Length: 361
Ligand code: SF4
Image (cartoon, rainbow, N blue to C red; front, side, top):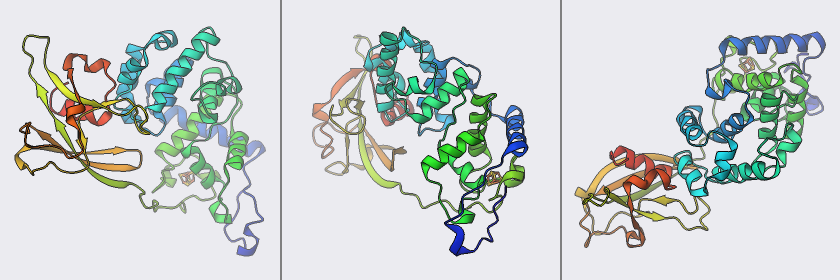
Protein backbone atom coordinates (compact mmCIF):
# COMPACT_ATOMS: atom_id res chain seq x y z
CA UNK A 1 0.00 0.00 0.00
CA UNK A 2 2.94 2.28 0.51
CA UNK A 3 3.51 5.26 -1.75
CA UNK A 4 7.19 6.08 -2.15
CA UNK A 5 8.42 9.65 -2.17
CA UNK A 6 10.62 8.91 -5.19
CA UNK A 7 7.69 9.55 -7.53
CA UNK A 8 8.88 12.11 -10.10
CA UNK A 9 7.73 15.61 -9.24
CA UNK A 10 5.89 16.12 -12.52
CA UNK A 11 3.62 13.14 -11.86
CA UNK A 12 2.95 13.72 -8.15
CA UNK A 13 -0.25 15.68 -8.51
CA UNK A 14 -1.82 12.85 -10.46
CA UNK A 15 -1.19 10.35 -7.64
CA UNK A 16 -3.66 9.58 -4.86
CA UNK A 17 -2.74 8.21 -1.47
CA UNK A 18 -3.36 4.47 -1.24
CA UNK A 19 -4.81 3.33 2.08
CA UNK A 20 -4.42 -0.22 3.37
CA UNK A 21 -7.08 -2.71 2.26
CA UNK A 22 -8.22 -6.26 2.93
CA UNK A 23 -6.23 -8.16 5.55
CA UNK A 24 -3.79 -5.29 5.79
CA UNK A 25 -6.60 -2.96 6.85
CA UNK A 26 -7.95 -5.54 9.30
CA UNK A 27 -4.49 -5.81 10.87
CA UNK A 28 -4.21 -2.02 11.07
CA UNK A 29 -7.53 -1.74 12.91
CA UNK A 30 -6.73 -4.59 15.29
CA UNK A 31 -3.31 -3.11 16.09
CA UNK A 32 -4.63 0.38 16.71
CA UNK A 33 -7.50 -0.85 18.91
CA UNK A 34 -5.11 -3.08 20.89
CA UNK A 35 -2.82 -0.12 21.48
CA UNK A 36 -5.78 2.04 22.55
CA UNK A 37 -6.97 -0.57 25.03
CA UNK A 38 -3.57 -0.61 26.68
CA UNK A 39 -2.39 2.96 26.42
CA UNK A 40 -5.39 5.27 26.43
CA UNK A 41 -5.54 7.98 29.03
CA UNK A 42 -8.08 7.49 31.80
CA UNK A 43 -10.57 10.27 31.21
CA UNK A 44 -13.96 10.54 32.90
CA UNK A 45 -15.93 10.69 29.64
CA UNK A 46 -14.39 7.39 28.61
CA UNK A 47 -16.06 5.63 31.53
CA UNK A 48 -19.53 6.13 30.13
CA UNK A 49 -21.66 5.57 27.05
CA UNK A 50 -24.29 8.07 28.17
CA UNK A 51 -24.89 10.47 25.28
CA UNK A 52 -25.40 13.41 27.66
CA UNK A 53 -21.94 13.02 29.19
CA UNK A 54 -20.24 12.33 25.87
CA UNK A 55 -21.92 15.32 24.26
CA UNK A 56 -20.88 17.57 27.15
CA UNK A 57 -17.26 16.41 26.96
CA UNK A 58 -17.14 16.91 23.19
CA UNK A 59 -18.48 20.46 23.44
CA UNK A 60 -16.10 21.32 26.29
CA UNK A 61 -13.11 19.84 24.45
CA UNK A 62 -13.63 22.02 21.38
CA UNK A 63 -10.57 24.28 21.23
CA UNK A 64 -9.82 23.53 24.87
CA UNK A 65 -7.11 21.34 26.39
CA UNK A 66 -8.07 18.16 28.24
CA UNK A 67 -6.37 19.36 31.43
CA UNK A 68 -8.46 22.54 31.42
CA UNK A 69 -11.70 20.60 30.88
CA UNK A 70 -11.39 17.94 33.60
CA UNK A 71 -12.43 20.01 36.64
CA UNK A 72 -15.07 21.97 34.74
CA UNK A 73 -16.57 18.73 33.48
CA UNK A 74 -16.85 17.31 36.99
CA UNK A 75 -18.36 20.48 38.48
CA UNK A 76 -20.74 20.99 35.56
CA UNK A 77 -22.09 17.46 35.95
CA UNK A 78 -22.54 17.99 39.69
CA UNK A 79 -24.63 21.03 38.94
CA UNK A 80 -26.44 19.71 35.85
CA UNK A 81 -26.41 15.91 36.10
CA UNK A 82 -28.82 15.30 33.20
CA UNK A 83 -30.42 16.91 30.18
CA UNK A 84 -33.61 17.84 32.05
CA UNK A 85 -31.74 19.76 34.75
CA UNK A 86 -29.72 21.60 32.13
CA UNK A 87 -32.78 22.40 30.03
CA UNK A 88 -34.61 23.81 33.07
CA UNK A 89 -31.72 26.07 34.13
CA UNK A 90 -31.42 29.77 33.28
CA UNK A 91 -28.86 30.81 30.70
CA UNK A 92 -27.00 32.84 33.34
CA UNK A 93 -26.67 29.73 35.53
CA UNK A 94 -25.22 27.76 32.59
CA UNK A 95 -22.80 30.56 31.70
CA UNK A 96 -21.73 30.82 35.35
CA UNK A 97 -20.92 27.09 35.40
CA UNK A 98 -19.05 27.46 32.11
CA UNK A 99 -17.01 30.40 33.39
CA UNK A 100 -13.30 29.85 32.84
CA UNK A 101 -13.67 27.58 29.81
CA UNK A 102 -13.99 30.41 27.29
CA UNK A 103 -15.77 30.38 23.92
CA UNK A 104 -19.07 31.07 25.67
CA UNK A 105 -21.10 30.64 22.53
CA UNK A 106 -20.61 26.92 23.15
CA UNK A 107 -22.41 27.21 26.49
CA UNK A 108 -25.32 29.09 24.94
CA UNK A 109 -25.67 26.51 22.18
CA UNK A 110 -25.38 23.70 24.72
CA UNK A 111 -28.27 25.21 26.64
CA UNK A 112 -30.39 25.70 23.50
CA UNK A 113 -29.65 22.14 22.46
CA UNK A 114 -30.68 20.78 25.88
CA UNK A 115 -33.97 22.69 25.66
CA UNK A 116 -34.65 21.36 22.17
CA UNK A 117 -33.96 17.78 23.24
CA UNK A 118 -36.20 18.18 26.29
CA UNK A 119 -39.05 19.81 24.35
CA UNK A 120 -38.93 18.00 21.01
CA UNK A 121 -37.31 14.63 21.72
CA UNK A 122 -38.76 13.75 25.12
CA UNK A 123 -35.38 14.28 26.78
CA UNK A 124 -33.63 11.61 24.65
CA UNK A 125 -30.83 12.22 22.17
CA UNK A 126 -31.42 11.14 18.55
CA UNK A 127 -29.56 7.84 18.10
CA UNK A 128 -27.72 8.55 14.85
CA UNK A 129 -25.41 11.20 13.42
CA UNK A 130 -27.98 12.54 10.99
CA UNK A 131 -30.51 13.20 13.74
CA UNK A 132 -27.87 14.67 16.02
CA UNK A 133 -26.68 17.12 13.37
CA UNK A 134 -30.08 18.75 13.29
CA UNK A 135 -29.55 19.99 16.86
CA UNK A 136 -28.07 23.42 17.76
CA UNK A 137 -24.30 23.49 18.17
CA UNK A 138 -23.77 19.96 16.85
CA UNK A 139 -21.74 19.79 13.65
CA UNK A 140 -20.49 16.87 11.62
CA UNK A 141 -17.62 16.00 13.95
CA UNK A 142 -19.63 16.17 17.20
CA UNK A 143 -22.56 14.25 15.70
CA UNK A 144 -20.24 11.46 14.56
CA UNK A 145 -18.43 11.36 17.90
CA UNK A 146 -21.67 11.02 19.91
CA UNK A 147 -23.26 8.56 17.47
CA UNK A 148 -20.23 6.27 17.33
CA UNK A 149 -19.31 6.37 21.03
CA UNK A 150 -22.79 6.32 22.58
CA UNK A 151 -24.71 4.35 19.95
CA UNK A 152 -21.98 2.39 18.08
CA UNK A 153 -22.97 3.85 14.73
CA UNK A 154 -20.10 3.25 12.25
CA UNK A 155 -19.44 6.87 11.31
CA UNK A 156 -15.92 8.28 11.29
CA UNK A 157 -14.79 11.48 12.98
CA UNK A 158 -12.27 13.97 11.66
CA UNK A 159 -10.79 16.50 14.05
CA UNK A 160 -7.38 18.17 13.84
CA UNK A 161 -5.67 15.09 15.29
CA UNK A 162 -7.29 12.63 12.89
CA UNK A 163 -6.60 14.89 9.94
CA UNK A 164 -2.89 15.03 10.79
CA UNK A 165 -2.64 11.29 11.39
CA UNK A 166 -4.31 10.54 8.06
CA UNK A 167 -2.14 12.99 6.15
CA UNK A 168 0.94 11.27 7.51
CA UNK A 169 -0.29 7.70 7.28
CA UNK A 170 -1.17 8.21 3.65
CA UNK A 171 2.01 10.13 2.87
CA UNK A 172 0.10 13.00 1.34
CA UNK A 173 3.10 15.30 1.63
CA UNK A 174 5.38 12.73 0.00
CA UNK A 175 3.27 12.80 -3.15
CA UNK A 176 2.93 16.55 -3.09
CA UNK A 177 -0.71 16.94 -2.06
CA UNK A 178 -2.66 18.28 0.85
CA UNK A 179 -5.76 16.15 1.36
CA UNK A 180 -8.88 18.29 1.03
CA UNK A 181 -11.44 17.88 3.81
CA UNK A 182 -13.98 15.88 1.76
CA UNK A 183 -11.22 13.37 0.89
CA UNK A 184 -10.03 13.28 4.49
CA UNK A 185 -13.54 12.36 5.66
CA UNK A 186 -13.72 9.64 3.02
CA UNK A 187 -10.38 8.18 4.09
CA UNK A 188 -11.39 8.34 7.76
CA UNK A 189 -14.55 6.40 6.92
CA UNK A 190 -12.56 3.81 4.94
CA UNK A 191 -10.20 3.23 7.87
CA UNK A 192 -13.02 2.93 10.43
CA UNK A 193 -13.59 -0.42 12.11
CA UNK A 194 -17.26 -1.43 11.94
CA UNK A 195 -16.99 -3.24 15.25
CA UNK A 196 -16.18 -0.84 18.10
CA UNK A 197 -16.42 2.28 15.88
CA UNK A 198 -16.54 4.59 18.89
CA UNK A 199 -13.33 3.15 20.32
CA UNK A 200 -11.68 3.22 16.91
CA UNK A 201 -12.51 6.90 16.48
CA UNK A 202 -11.16 7.63 19.92
CA UNK A 203 -8.04 5.59 19.17
CA UNK A 204 -7.30 7.68 16.06
CA UNK A 205 -7.75 10.88 18.06
CA UNK A 206 -5.66 9.50 20.94
CA UNK A 207 -2.87 8.59 18.54
CA UNK A 208 -2.80 12.16 17.25
CA UNK A 209 -3.00 13.65 20.74
CA UNK A 210 -0.29 11.53 22.37
CA UNK A 211 1.99 10.00 19.69
CA UNK A 212 1.59 11.59 16.27
CA UNK A 213 2.10 15.09 17.63
CA UNK A 214 2.15 18.19 15.43
CA UNK A 215 5.83 18.72 16.15
CA UNK A 216 8.03 15.79 16.94
CA UNK A 217 5.85 12.72 16.29
CA UNK A 218 7.10 9.70 18.27
CA UNK A 219 7.34 7.41 15.27
CA UNK A 220 9.51 4.84 17.03
CA UNK A 221 6.77 4.32 19.62
CA UNK A 222 3.92 4.43 17.14
CA UNK A 223 1.75 1.29 16.97
CA UNK A 224 0.88 1.82 13.30
CA UNK A 225 4.36 2.74 12.12
CA UNK A 226 4.37 -0.26 9.82
CA UNK A 227 1.50 1.20 7.80
CA UNK A 228 2.70 4.81 7.76
CA UNK A 229 4.23 6.39 4.68
CA UNK A 230 5.56 9.49 6.45
CA UNK A 231 7.07 7.72 9.45
CA UNK A 232 9.98 9.69 10.81
CA UNK A 233 9.71 12.24 8.06
CA UNK A 234 6.70 14.07 9.39
CA UNK A 235 7.37 17.72 9.91
CA UNK A 236 9.09 18.64 13.14
CA UNK A 237 8.70 22.33 12.71
CA UNK A 238 5.54 23.98 13.98
CA UNK A 239 4.02 26.73 11.88
CA UNK A 240 4.76 30.19 13.22
CA UNK A 241 2.39 31.30 15.96
CA UNK A 242 -0.39 33.56 14.77
CA UNK A 243 -1.15 34.75 18.29
CA UNK A 244 -1.51 38.51 18.70
CA UNK A 245 -0.21 40.17 21.83
CA UNK A 246 -2.04 42.80 23.87
CA UNK A 247 -1.55 44.56 27.17
CA UNK A 248 -4.47 45.53 29.41
CA UNK A 249 -5.01 46.99 32.89
CA UNK A 250 -7.72 45.77 35.28
CA UNK A 251 -8.98 47.38 38.48
CA UNK A 252 -9.74 45.01 41.35
CA UNK A 253 -11.84 46.94 43.84
CA UNK A 254 -13.49 45.24 46.80
CA UNK A 255 -15.63 46.36 49.71
CA UNK A 256 -15.59 44.53 52.98
CA UNK A 257 -18.86 43.20 54.30
CA UNK A 258 -20.50 45.33 56.94
CA UNK A 259 -22.88 42.84 58.39
CA UNK A 260 -24.95 42.89 55.20
CA UNK A 261 -24.08 39.41 54.05
CA UNK A 262 -20.45 39.76 52.98
CA UNK A 263 -18.04 41.65 50.76
CA UNK A 264 -18.56 42.99 47.29
CA UNK A 265 -16.47 43.38 44.19
CA UNK A 266 -16.96 45.89 41.41
CA UNK A 267 -17.73 44.32 38.03
CA UNK A 268 -18.91 45.64 34.69
CA UNK A 269 -21.09 43.82 32.19
CA UNK A 270 -19.82 43.42 28.64
CA UNK A 271 -22.20 44.75 25.98
CA UNK A 272 -24.88 42.27 24.92
CA UNK A 273 -23.86 42.83 21.31
CA UNK A 274 -20.10 42.25 21.91
CA UNK A 275 -18.64 39.65 19.57
CA UNK A 276 -16.63 38.10 22.39
CA UNK A 277 -18.31 36.95 25.62
CA UNK A 278 -21.45 39.11 25.24
CA UNK A 279 -23.26 39.95 28.48
CA UNK A 280 -20.62 38.44 30.73
CA UNK A 281 -19.30 40.22 33.83
CA UNK A 282 -15.68 41.21 34.35
CA UNK A 283 -13.38 43.55 36.24
CA UNK A 284 -13.23 47.10 34.82
CA UNK A 285 -10.43 47.12 32.30
CA UNK A 286 -8.60 49.39 29.95
CA UNK A 287 -6.18 49.12 27.08
CA UNK A 288 -4.20 52.02 28.58
CA UNK A 289 -2.45 52.36 31.95
CA UNK A 290 -3.98 54.43 34.75
CA UNK A 291 -3.78 58.18 34.70
CA UNK A 292 -1.98 59.75 36.40
CA UNK A 293 0.59 56.93 36.73
CA UNK A 294 0.28 55.29 40.13
CA UNK A 295 2.91 52.52 40.39
CA UNK A 296 2.03 51.49 43.95
CA UNK A 297 -1.44 50.41 42.76
CA UNK A 298 0.10 47.61 40.71
CA UNK A 299 -0.67 44.30 42.38
CA UNK A 300 0.17 41.45 39.97
CA UNK A 301 0.65 40.67 36.29
CA UNK A 302 -1.09 37.70 34.65
CA UNK A 303 -0.81 36.02 31.28
CA UNK A 304 -4.09 35.06 29.68
CA UNK A 305 -5.03 33.81 26.21
CA UNK A 306 -8.39 34.31 24.52
CA UNK A 307 -8.84 32.83 21.04
CA UNK A 308 -5.90 34.21 19.00
CA UNK A 309 -4.71 36.83 21.47
CA UNK A 310 -2.20 36.52 24.31
CA UNK A 311 -2.88 39.15 26.95
CA UNK A 312 -0.51 40.58 29.53
CA UNK A 313 -2.85 41.73 32.29
CA UNK A 314 -1.72 44.24 34.92
CA UNK A 315 -4.02 44.15 37.92
CA UNK A 316 -4.33 47.28 40.02
CA UNK A 317 -5.56 47.25 43.59
CA UNK A 318 -6.23 49.94 46.16
CA UNK A 319 -6.26 52.80 43.70
CA UNK A 320 -7.21 56.12 45.29
CA UNK A 321 -10.74 56.31 43.94
CA UNK A 322 -10.89 59.96 42.97
CA UNK A 323 -7.68 60.86 41.25
CA UNK A 324 -6.53 57.66 39.52
CA UNK A 325 -8.65 56.20 36.74
CA UNK A 326 -8.35 53.66 34.00
CA UNK A 327 -8.73 55.81 30.87
CA UNK A 328 -11.38 53.71 29.15
CA UNK A 329 -12.29 51.25 31.86
CA UNK A 330 -15.46 53.10 32.88
CA UNK A 331 -15.53 51.72 36.41
CA UNK A 332 -18.35 54.15 37.15
CA UNK A 333 -20.61 51.95 35.01
CA UNK A 334 -19.80 48.94 37.13
CA UNK A 335 -21.89 47.39 39.86
CA UNK A 336 -20.95 46.20 43.29
CA UNK A 337 -21.65 42.47 43.16
CA UNK A 338 -21.92 40.40 46.34
CA UNK A 339 -19.02 37.97 46.45
CA UNK A 340 -21.34 35.26 47.79
CA UNK A 341 -23.35 35.46 44.58
CA UNK A 342 -20.38 35.09 42.20
CA UNK A 343 -20.96 31.33 41.61
CA UNK A 344 -24.30 32.26 40.00
CA UNK A 345 -22.96 35.18 37.94
CA UNK A 346 -21.52 34.56 34.45
CA UNK A 347 -18.04 36.04 34.87
CA UNK A 348 -15.22 35.82 32.34
CA UNK A 349 -12.39 33.34 32.75
CA UNK A 350 -9.86 36.14 33.27
CA UNK A 351 -11.94 37.67 36.05
CA UNK A 352 -12.33 34.27 37.69
CA UNK A 353 -8.57 33.75 37.51
CA UNK A 354 -7.87 37.12 39.17
CA UNK A 355 -10.53 36.73 41.88
CA UNK A 356 -9.17 33.28 42.70
CA UNK A 357 -5.58 34.55 42.84
CA UNK A 358 -6.73 37.27 45.23
CA UNK A 359 -8.44 34.75 47.51
CA UNK A 360 -11.76 36.50 46.85
CA UNK A 361 -13.54 33.42 45.55
S1 SF4 B 1 4.67 6.59 12.27
FE1 SF4 B 1 5.01 8.68 12.96
S2 SF4 B 1 4.08 10.02 11.42
FE2 SF4 B 1 3.28 7.92 11.10
S3 SF4 B 1 1.33 7.88 12.25
FE3 SF4 B 1 2.94 7.07 13.60
S4 SF4 B 1 3.67 8.89 14.75
FE4 SF4 B 1 2.50 9.65 12.97
